[in-house]
View (cartoon, rainbow, N blue to C red):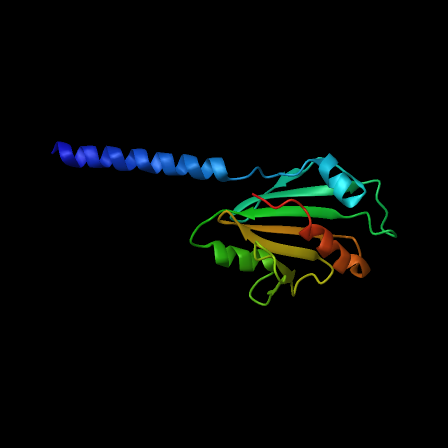
Length: 161
């Protein structure tokens, strides 16, 4: 009788250790500092605002003092999907559904891909996998003419987590 209780206690302890390890590796919802984004993009940013995230965390950063004409007025989002069995399905849905395409970026160490969404063709959107997480970094509002340049800038941001 004592062996099953011991086994249950040990199992519960290991589960708590495992959950704690996952919690420690989950990055914050708003991982970038506005000043770092300002240096990277050349325009001011407000503090990140946490938003509901599908299967993980999500944060929106809005530019401050930008110009639509110059392509410096936009919103940038970071979505981090936790490791798990439904991660691929959530990635597909976050990209815009089954008709979304992931175009691989040649030679990218994290397997980054440009996301081509059937829902919003003006969205500059990349996705990659790192440390078991799927990360989306996207920008909207910069204009279609600047979309390729914005994808390049998103790819050069520090990688998460």
